[in-house]
Length: 540
Image 1: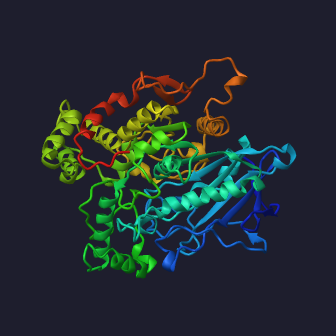
Image 2: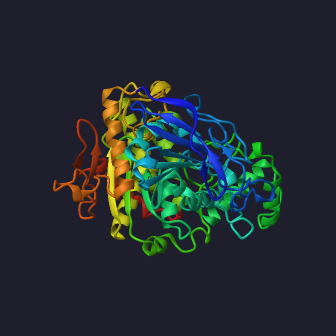
Image 3: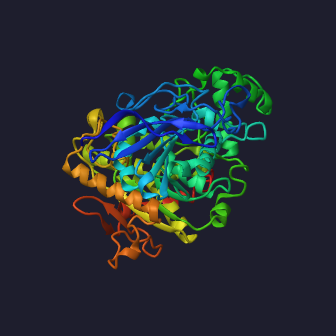
């Protein structure tokens, strides 16, 4: 595309924390984007601050060189590490953020809409560095927005809890909230409009965008891809006790002070986790993820339904990919027989959630997906497994969320991303039972950076990249992915979600996105009935 990173420094910017200097990125048309990376926004979360809310960074007076990403928060390296922009790990210095802003702000004298990216990774892995710098400058900033990406604490560092006042948890969410406060206080120095900030993210980052939007500690527009998992504080505290015992803690369950001291004394390397449990660690608590946000009574001071109804009405853009489960099935292996499907169902559907009804639930799920499948048809069995995993992990929750937020009076734009380049899966192509748009595959068309492999776009990819970045930046600027409707009398391409047509959504595909009425073939209706039988599910 002809763009290049210049050796020139970007102009110094004075923030309330102190002056920062970045580096410039020159676009193919000669314009420049300024990139300020690794700006610290919080004090080092170490020692007695390890499991505490973050404290604002102590201001500095000398110009701070912010030309490279800051380190990642501690974690275990897992998927696609060789394809991601991996930087070092450092518990003390990981709470940083990055600002990407058009240099032409000095000429236009405008305040640009601000997009704050929160990375995914199951609340356990990744960092802002994994999702691009020059690609953000080239694909988003060129559409006249300021983009911020942030780091936050992960795994036990971000979501350990004792379940009481010793440690209420959700430190990772408090990190995100503090970063948003920093943005509010400083973004105008970078040409951003602090009164027009959109938080966007994917997977765990999408979950975070929603949670920040409903907490009274941080509220605003939300742009989400996928839904999320949360636990009651009791369930999360139980998991944390089991993890501490795995590490060697021998105290009483009631000794939460001793538990906290034990965890504070551990070297950071022992507390690092990934998406999958550490070898030998088992928990009695259900769920796809280990360390996740909990209903702590602090970041979420009232029940979630109450917070959602109390909060200001806001526009929301949310969606999934067509084959969310394809990613999870590929990484976890997949059943090729009816018995394999049953075995997998037993692993997922647990007695701690469904009690005496567990076997009935397992049977109903098996019948729903497998009743009409020939036992020898391995292809069809795999397809149904992909549907099952996608519906269970993501699709049903997203559908439930969309309906609820629309019922509360929010303006919701709902989509299913269906486009994929069959040559764009990198090494994952050897693991996939078949190819399709799956978890994470839409990210290259939002940020311009691949997750499964390097992003080498063909002409169709470039067209989809323009479609997605236009939707996202329009939403940030106008609260509507179709842009400023006052400029056109045409019917919008993307209709606002209507609860009276619950499965109507935008199919994002080529040659042209279009509205459709059959989201995931209406399978999520089945999961609504299953959800009613889940006695342990924390209500969202």
